[in-house]
Length: 275
Image (cartoon, rainbow, N blue to C red; front, side):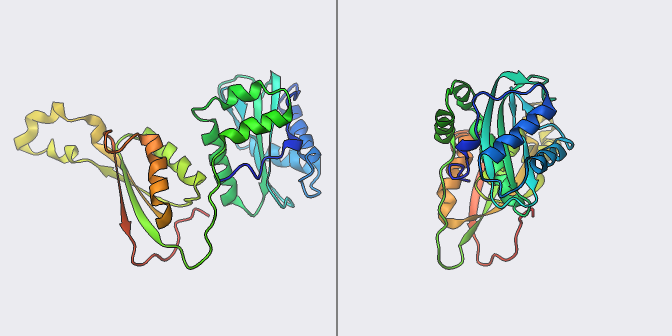
């Protein structure tokens, strides 16, 4: 997902102020309207949409960051912007810290898949980078936007022509924590559906064979349970996607805990999209 075409610098702020969560949401809605891309949707409507999302659980995810987002009836295009509150705002964050950086996503009601991709791309842009610290030093919205885009993912152009050739990717993970990072990467790259199977490694069964019973204590407990992810990917993006996965798992030829393979598909009908 390319964020560079979506970020609205006119709605960004380097000096956002609010006393509490409700005031922050109203202020963020006002910034969205100021940005000029809300298609006539009022500040009140945007505020209500953000409040509705917050009622389902705080988007203050911790580490002084919040990602308020909502699907808004009547909105024709995505509105994405950043607001820095130097003094922080009490926002009911999960870690109870004040929020200093708001990343706001407002999207059309009928584009949930794109909304999810944007959330995933934004989350990955923030993960393991210096983006947060750099944005807090920005003195102008222009600098803020430039810093953000420097960390944003590259755009992948759609190739016109005949039906896309697909491959089946099979990814076996023995480290459960990796699965969430992999799925976040899939969403960012537009891989909108996958089947995840609970699976087991050989050690679970080998240790139950009487001949090998004395080796039970030597079996690596982490290798007993695994998750197997099945997903279809565009054949022409195979190398790129594998490289993206290895940025999470490490080099699969050198590290234990994961295995990946791809198979050519003679027939591919239907979809595993979530929505």
